[in-house]
Image 1 (cartoon, rainbow, N blue to C red):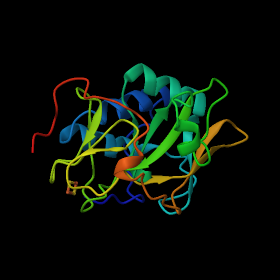
Image 2 (cartoon, rainbow, N blue to C red):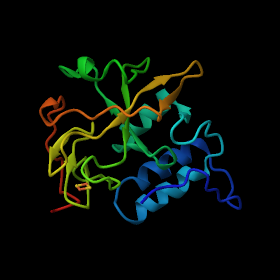
Image 3 (cartoon, rainbow, N blue to C red):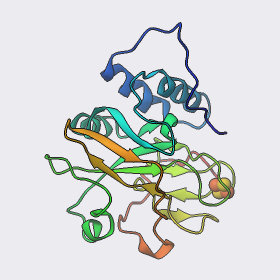
Length: 202
Ligand code: FES
C-alpha cells in the first residue's frame, strides 16, 4: 500500500513529459493494474526535487498540468508524492473562500489542488473512478467528489490535502510536509452527482 520514493528502474528509458502525463492520468482510472502502472511511471521521473515530506516540484508547468487534467477528465496521479492533483473552479460559489488560500490558480484562471491519496477513514489509497468522476475507496466504500470532498461512506471528512504554489518557473510546488485537514462533511462546496457507474459498490 505504501510507496517507496527512492525506487528507481534504471534500465527504462526516460519518457517525454507529455507522455508521462498521459500515462499517469490513464493509470489513475482504475483501482488495480492501472494504479500500479501509475505508481511505476511516477517513480521514473528523474527530476523530483524532494521526496515525500518535503516540497515537491512537479515536472511540468502548472498550465500544462491543468490543461491535461481537464482534457483527460482525470486527476494527475503522482504516487511518489502520495498525491493527486485536481483542478478546481474559483468561480464556483464558496470555492475561493474555502480553497483560495492554500491552492493556487493559474494565469488562465484554473485552480490546482493537491489531494493526499490516503483515505481519511482507515488509510487505504483511494483510486480514481473515471466513470463516476469520483474518488472511491475499495476498502469500506467511502466516496469523495472530484475535489476530494466527502460524498458518502464511513470517512469522517473529505480527503486531506497539501498546500501548493506556483513557482517562478511556472511549475507547481507541493508542500507534502504540511497536511491540511480535509473539509468537514458539511463543508462541501462542489455539488457533483456521480457522472456514470460507480467503481466501488459497498
Ligand atoms: S479506508 Fe477508505 S473507506 Fe475505510
